[in-house]
Image 1 (cartoon, rainbow, N blue to C red):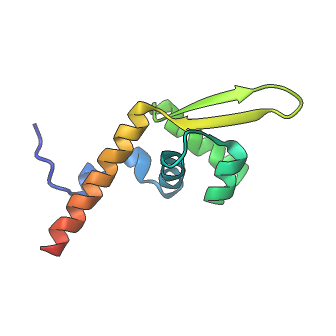
Image 2: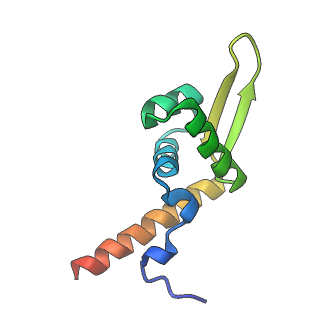
Length: 102
């Protein structure tokens, strides 16, 4: 078992990318957000947001619900695995900062 020391190698590479970090952080503070809400919060283009959501969905960090109709709607939420991964990511950052403060 590897000791958790708070090094950059421990950072989750899926979450660590700037756009995905912004998405996960936004979702961590809400039960669910629409595609349009995420676009507004993150400032990402439709195409970039779609790609980043697909990566997070493939990793099992987000669940996406698509509703058909006259105005198709996409709702996104963090899965329990996504919440755990984000919490672990923040823990690594806290350990890194703690090491630097000593």
